[in-house]
Image 1 (tube, one colour):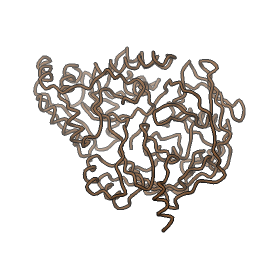
Image 2: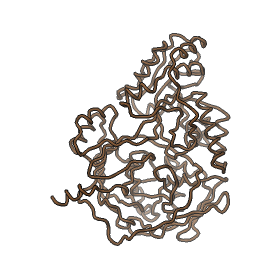
Image 3: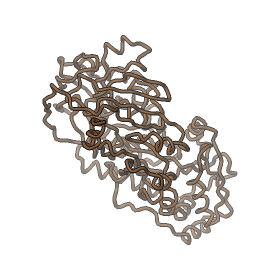
Image 4: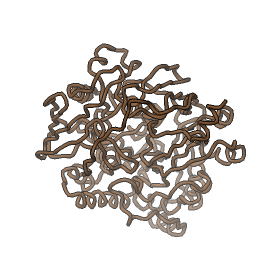
Length: 524
């Protein structure tokens, strides 16, 4: 399970006209459900608690938001068909009058007010940060909502991540809301066998009706046996397959299953704990010396990692965000391996025979960690694996700085660099919620300033330049060493048509059947 975290962003879009097609008759459906294989079960069907990749695959088809992303992070109307910004702190949203919850209740402005205020009060929610700039929200009439912000700031991207719930159903369900979802999305829940299967059927009140009538999510949590499961059951879409299994899949691949790749957002990077002193290392921490970190950077070969670990798939990373993210600086290039420069820096800094603990969670293959240890041995750095027993121990160690080096990954799902700036690069400030993921112990006043001020910059070009400056500062300081950008890998059957997007969303309404496969099934 991968938790995702995102904050606000400023993107201006053209408002698109909203139209509906003739919806009196649903499209013909393949009688067999679409089967989707997941690696982790949904933790809860309360959409305002988790911010997890696997949960989003399901909940994103039951609940909707005021604003949506298209496949390239451009903003589109969702439940809000248009909006205005009458002054720099006021946003007015006009709601769709054709949106209905799956119980037949029409969407009304009080539902939006309830949903946002509910999330603002949920201190235990992964999503609460999306409401941090919202000062007040009120219904102007049944289909108009006004949101006031504390300061001049865009909240449009935040609204992409705030699910709208039905006030009556939430209050009626009480503590059982996590198992009784009622949303305006194209599907509704009819079965949940925990850690085994989730079944959704078409929401009859959703317009226009989806091509798919029924969806079965199969949960298979063991990555070591997932390939065998895929080959035996042939799901229509498999959402995860370890890269080390690609060659085996290709050699055993049935004719009706195909590998599909899309550019991903997940940047894999090394965290250097740059605090002056750290456990497991006597005296001064060599990682606090920029020369030592540069030496490790020159000794690291991302090309070898991509070829060896990802079987040639993936892109070298030059910074902690992917090129598709607003704020990416194309002038920053990945560090080219140079063992002589690395050795020279170590000599200048006076480091020799350094033993460097490399932390990771127990139970993995450690292929990436061992390859990095092998690369660093070429300049005389002795890496050794140290294992955390589980993710809980890892989270505690990362947050408290009780580690030396670790590989982690992050997907900037908001499509904006300010997300990682606030989460992973700002000097930690508990009251403001800044730097909760700043595991490196990094602090740069100039980066902090950009983080705190960029959202108030109204000119997109000026704001882009500010974010790019922060990326350049971080790349020079090297608290993190970007390695690669992992592509999204799926297995898709010939029965369905589906194009994955860089946003990583799974929108079942965009899945259709290939005509030949549908006709073949109907003739049986």
